[in-house]
Length: 84
Image 1 (cartoon, rainbow, N blue to C red):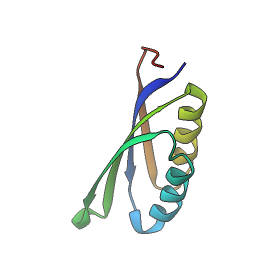
Image 2: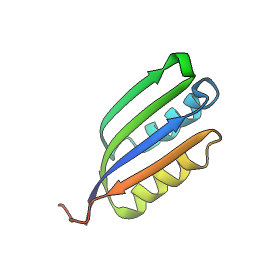
Image 3: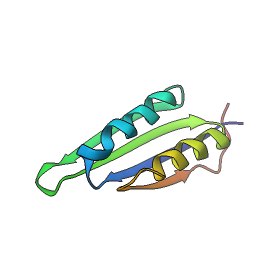
């Protein structure tokens, strides 16, 4: 069964991490239903929110890969309800 999840990421130095971040996101594009980015240019921080639908293992894999990037903080909220 699939779950709906929201992955929130704070890129504390987006210039250094955005290419690796985007490469990971592109490799999981089949899960992603929505993406919103908010650059805080004066503070050199970017906030990215991803809405995803997929198997729990795939969601956790995406979250884990993003969370291993330097200067990237990641949190995920996963629905309890299964969807088709």
